[in-house]
Amino acid sequence: MTTIRRFSCNDLLRFTSVNLDHLTETFNMSFYMTYLARWPDYFHVAEGPGNRVMGYIMGKVEGQGESWHGHVTAVTVSPEYRRQQLAKKLMNLLEEISDKIDKAYFVDLFVRASNTPAIKMYEKLGYIIYRRVLRYYSGEEDGLDMRKALSRDVEKKSVIPLKRPITPDELEYD
Image 1 (cartoon, rainbow, N blue to C red):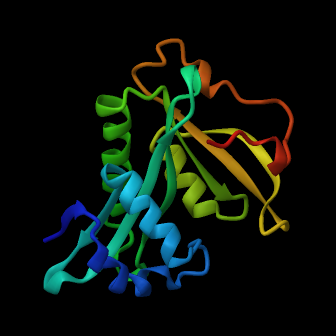
Image 2: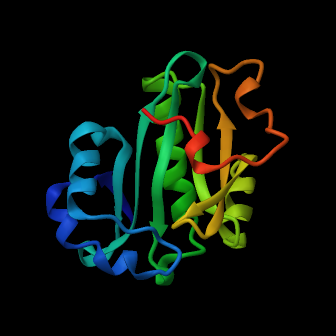
């Protein structure tokens, strides 16, 4: 039985094993604490039997006007719990919060261009490659900015792909 609930401070001491995957971005403790304090609705953990952490998602809501959107900062599932649609459930939760509570126009995320399994999963969830960000990861590997329009974006303007790649300094941040 899997339980999905809000992430808590205690989980910061329990989720290290999930972050051991080489494709998972890891951050310092203050980064996680900031997300937990500022966007608690966007930070969830999936627990299995024995309160074992199976995976988590953390994100935020940001932007202005038609750029108001939910952002997936990290979603990861421990290798032994993959292929159970856990990432899909976590993504659906973040999308629903972005759509119904925060009335965002879209959800976006960044993924390594080499992470084919994740890209395929996101495409199955309805995400499109909006643009390529050159040398996004540590100044070495390109990232793909993927987006999914939400109900507020009736004309789907937020998911019209850019025709050229951009550099990290061209990204808009809040």
